[in-house]
Image 1 (cartoon, rainbow, N blue to C red):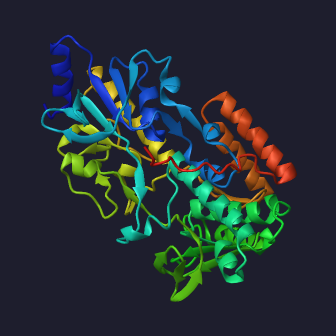
Image 2: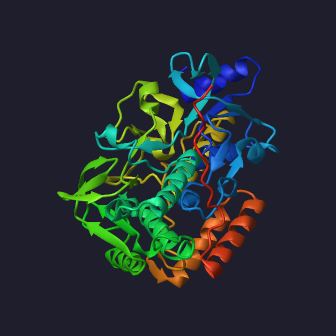
Image 3: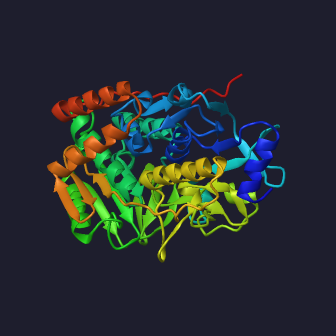
Length: 432
């Protein structure tokens, strides 16, 4: 039953509609599910969490600008009006390719078509021991944990009498200068130098150091050199120390070694690399160095035309390069795969043209009212780019309530510099 037409024939022979299983409720998975709403199929979305997270704004949660609920929405709520879709909460542990089943713990969910949109996790380039002391930002759990660490550092500094220890507590190192690292660095600098400046009695939050470290020659390498330089100047205006061309060689609970120089820092944050989910291992296929599954031009897995891989988990060739793991790629891929499945189930065996990504541009914000935007051949920086960045992020948030709340919080922060979600939530107790 490897051939796509055989899959449809098998489903029709049993008098049932083809079953499409989507693993992952992120940008790509949800786009695929919604695009199948009129197709003659039954759709099951499986995720280990019950909500979709707008990942580009996780850093705002981590720096106390927004609450977790402001950037997330229950997956069941998103699909509640789609009668051919259901949602299952569970953690996928494997795929029985021969039996066409997705393994969810002790359960097995059969499929006729499978879409793997399982996202990515942090990559520490062979230094797994760095993860506990330099956490990254991929989920709401990560964001609330980072918020706790960042705010706790200021609280501990208030009680610290040793100047060296206090300086270490007030030093934040962000490793990796892509959009996440740049936005996180700018947000922490504004939190320290603006939002907290009148809140403490025994130290001046303006003495906080924020270091952004990039092993490559410049920050925001996906942007033009001009916009990269503009963003760096914006960060430096906020007080961020930008270090490019310097690799991190050691990270521990007491500091970071940057280009051979030891920096005492109690808080290190990771934004330097990602590793794809274990989908390739589930399928028993070869993956690239980042763990991504190389796919055919129609985003199916070689030798398995009923299995599609999209988003951060897929290695999609575009010329001599591989498409980046960004939301727009995942969403366009989800829509494309849904069209391919809908055509197959309708009996149209003519293949779709190969998937082609339409690059809609890159955006990154640097603090309160400065951003850089690269949209086709147009380059913007400053306040106008920040307005574009704000509008795009509001547009893609799910739910009118979330859009209204985020707009209000951003307006409040813009006018007052205040952060309304400065809550230190302790981790769950391990006591019985």
